[in-house]
Image (cartoon, rainbow, N blue to C red):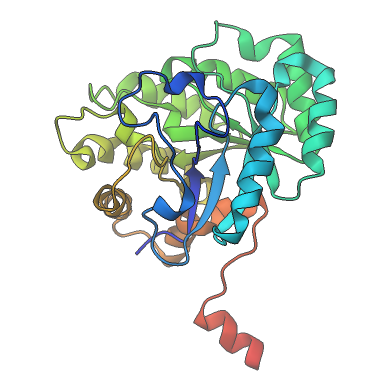
Length: 291
């Protein structure tokens, strides 16, 4: 099987923190905790902030870290940081640097007004995040990809991770406009992509795989395996073990004919590099160490 790092996992508990966006969301307005993850044994996880109330951001990091005793596969955290506050975000970043699991930050860009990413304050905050040594997860809708490309060009010192392939119009099957915008984004060498989130963008009345395959293949074609990583987006895009296995199989199908090194990049290599994780050592590495 393909996966050894799941680069996009959420956990939450509404009894611990406040998640306003969960109100009225069928099936999600309850606790989702690590023991429920449908991962294969040994799959490490990158937790991505789950959009709790902004003033609870540090508490979210500390709560997730406290789950470590029952979640040994937790490898890194992407925490919330209000980069739109410009240089003032340095105080938030200093707090996050005291928490060793935090390797990246995120502030949701989706549904923000046009130009939000390119304000002087947002760009200044992004530069602060880069100087602090954090990656930045960019969660945008497909209509915002061109603006994200301009943002990436303005902050070349910041490593940017595009979440969910830029939320393409998977249900509609409209590849052309999204592909053109992704091609422009791929020209920015500081951007990598998560092959994730298809379930949330697909037509729920039809199987996800045939809807998602053209978008996965085009992502790999534009960015290359060395700039792609796999993520589940659990529990937003999938919840059940069968859905998880189907997603892994779908990405494997999209990569049919890929080399071993390309498969390794998507399975763990890109995530290991970008989030500065310890690589899993396989039998070949272990034999080398014996010599």
